[in-house]
Length: 159
Image (cartoon, rainbow, N blue to C red; front, side):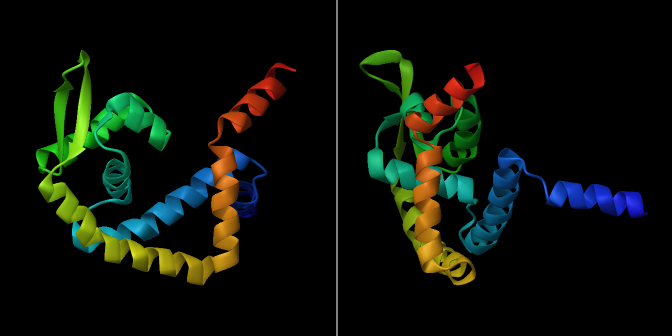
């Protein structure tokens, strides 16, 4: 029993940045998913709709890059959105090998419907974490997804 508690403590107190980020991401995603549940969207789906709302039409590659996702994983996540009529996926007339993704009228309405729920989730996050801390966290996370961070990280691995 004591050994099991020590093992659990080691997991909880891990110094691994990746583990800490993954755990935090899963927890926050669970909370946002709960907040968004009345809209029928998961946080991952709403993120895609919101990104398309800012930059449509977008190819799968462009959207994957903007979301820092693998194109294959994005294609998998797009299927239910397309099935439900929230996005359309068409052949790019300029490059038949590429697909263009756009919000449909129904997708825009679903995104608008989820805006109030998302705002409540944001308010809940900032109430729990702090407004100043939330701003600082978003800034730190922007660095983590930057090319500069990746370059320095990869350089450190080879050095």
